[in-house]
Image 1 (cartoon, rainbow, N blue to C red):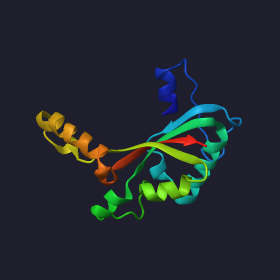
Image 2: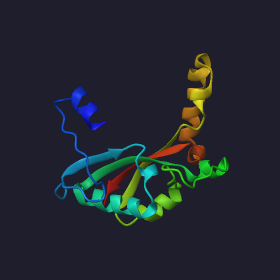
Image 3: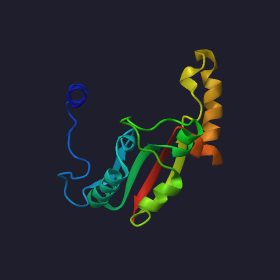
Image 4: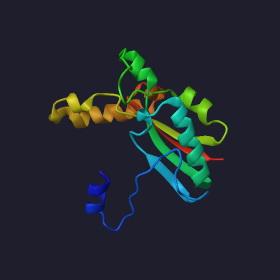
Length: 152
């Protein structure tokens, strides 16, 4: 993927590394973001990633990421063992894990409805409903939750 990214964007700097131990100096970034990454970790590794993110973000820096909703997975009784995208949590669990160094600025569910499975002609109508559900108190029942955290 890095080779393809470099081919498409030769003017940008792409690096591969260990998210728990980067080579970046302290307080280097204003913002870090990742999507569909946390789901591939376990709880201990996620904690290490949060520690590293805290180290390399400037004071007041923002961390934006998504994670699979454990409530959604339990709702459909998804078997979690033996799958590489096994890790999920809910907002309460995330708050416990991040409370020492982070403040949540925003949260929103994404993909409450399986829109990709609906007929193409009806998807825009269902997307409107999906957006409402994902911004409502039902957001924790969406497939994923996107959060924006600020470093204290």
